[in-house]
Image (cartoon, rainbow, N blue to C red):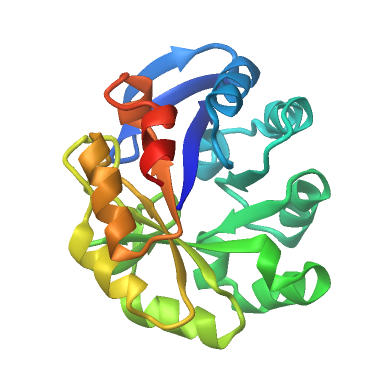
Length: 235
């Protein structure tokens, strides 16, 4: 199981939101590069870097994210507001992987065009879910597509890696949505990264036992409730 710290960037700062609400945020650092180096030194396998301003349509932190990628040696997956072919290709010029949610579910033709050009293995499908349904556009729009059928559809299109964020758990420290993760991990061929609600070491043990291939560490890591070293020891 890969240990993947999240670095969520808003206005150039490292922040955490509660359930994706920009009004409910905590600022942890003014220096995303320093945070990235800290997590790399602690033993992170990959970094999950999110452009929250792009997600919310209020700006871009791509220059900062590019600097993060250049300053560390571990892989980075970039997420947040990657909704056009141009911006996805721009990100994949400097980062190994792009995490696509809104584009994947709303603009399938463009997604497949990019996939044919750069390979489906460089795209992670972001299956953000609320009450079992996929939500997009910064979690503001419910697609009506069930989590499981969404994953199965993208598997049939040649994608295999899925990041599942349970919106009602994100930033809450209320524990992961084990039921949804269990159902997703049971789908043959799907590699699942768990995100949302991790609050203690036992949560990471629980998701590992279910069969996830990676776990995102957010608020619990920043609030020092768990460490990367602890999670690596059980991963």
